[in-house]
Length: 84
Image (cartoon, rainbow, N blue to C red; front, top):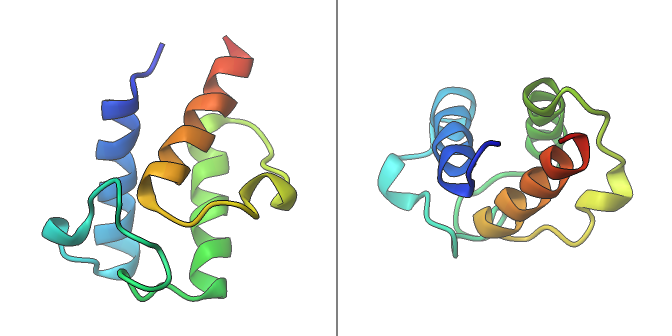
């Protein structure tokens, strides 16, 4: 089973590679839109990448409440837990 720490590390890599977010800004409490300057198109791109990571389709409704890096980690962890 993948740990939340592993998910955070993977997510951090995606954010740095795809959106040039500085590593020091990527913390569990960082807000995707306010702190990391992601927009709705970036969010869609990130969901697509996370679907590849989890191997599962992620319903948009499941990510509606996601606001922070920690929220994303929890959502991906839940996705991976369902598969296990």
